[in-house]
Length: 194
Ligand code: SF4
Image (cartoon, rainbow, N blue to C red; front, side, top):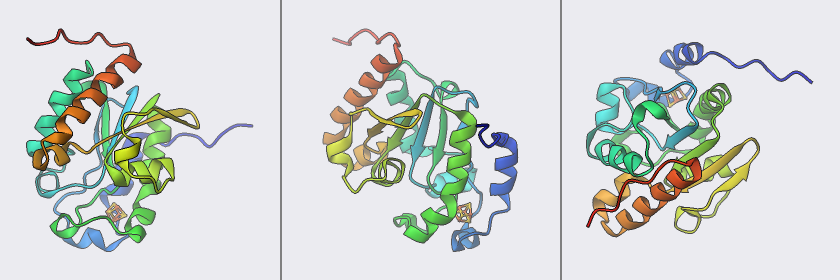
């Protein structure tokens, strides 16, 4: 059976740019579609844009983005190697949690992005993306660092990098999990620093 054709990323981007499917469009400065390598082996899925992301229209900028860059380096990756997207494309006011109806309205875009990019690995950052992608109620604390096969993809949940900005104890787990990701990808590990 022939599957549904993949929609080019630029066509999905154009649909998202005008989207008014949920009330979050009213407060946004910019839609944050996502960015990176359209043929990436690794799709990274965060939660939703924050203040800086909304202002710049780019995912993971500011302190959490800088830390994500450091974590990617642990896995032997740079931003240009991966594609980074979020469950929601518009910022929830005050960075509140995404609501179920917003997730339902927005995630068809993420599904299409995933089909088009067709990554080997989906790295879910934090609870919301992990619960959505794995269709589970189990929290990130139990799931992080464990690869799980889901259809054509291997899903690899990791804490959200922003969590480590407020709770330094999460840094160890984050850095270990990104090192594991690098091994799964077959990337050389950087030499240990004494
Ligand atoms: Fe559309 Fe998603 Fe933005 Fe809601 S969050 S307006 S569904 S792009």
